[in-house]
Length: 310
Image (cartoon, rainbow, N blue to C red; front, side, top):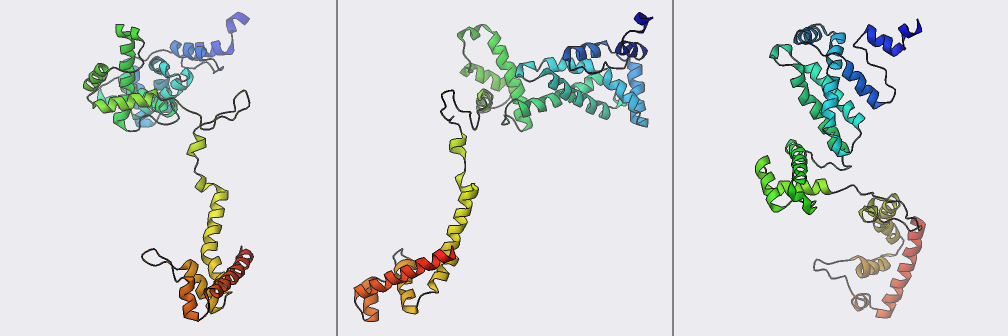
């Protein structure tokens, strides 16, 4: 009796071949499960596609998706060379498959497998471009096409006999060949190769084993002008240079104020300053030393006023 009942998962699979074994965190078990799901005949595919398109039959859409999960697994294997988790590639491909089922038109005369390939690859490509490097290596449609084709062709070069030279970079002949094959400029090939060759760099590396602070781009890329303390100090300086100075000048008598303005604040169009000590001495009928004393007293008074303002 117990042997005929089997495990719950097995009994469910026998009763309903479309039921996927519940995920146990094991990718191999998932792949084995989807490979056991039955394929659809052309007639079944047409039937389910029409049910979903005309009546929004979610169960029919589910059968279309489940029967093509093995296709996603197959396509995702071709992108394992990017160093990204296989499970994540499959997951992104499944999203593309669902998008394909949603947009599939059974009246176009093509099988879902052919139509879904584009959507599966597009989602996997998008995932790779977002996660292969922290900084995007390709943004436009042309750059994305060049990225994947270039990588494929470079792998082909490595498999050839000239790979025995252990060269990582492309030769001039290989660059020219790629440019012709991909119908792009030679400079575009070189630029994309440089982007692909550049690895990620930690902005703020951890200290070394001997306790020395790690030196990374954060040390020379940081914008100190936007650091909160620096911004507050800058605003305070600006305020002191305008409102603060104006308030301090208000504390002076007219003669002292004019002496300070002529000596320190006035700038002519030619870049020269205001009147000299001797010019002011002649104007007020006193000695240059007296003008200097008045100036010193005025500056001292202004300093106290600025301190109170701050």
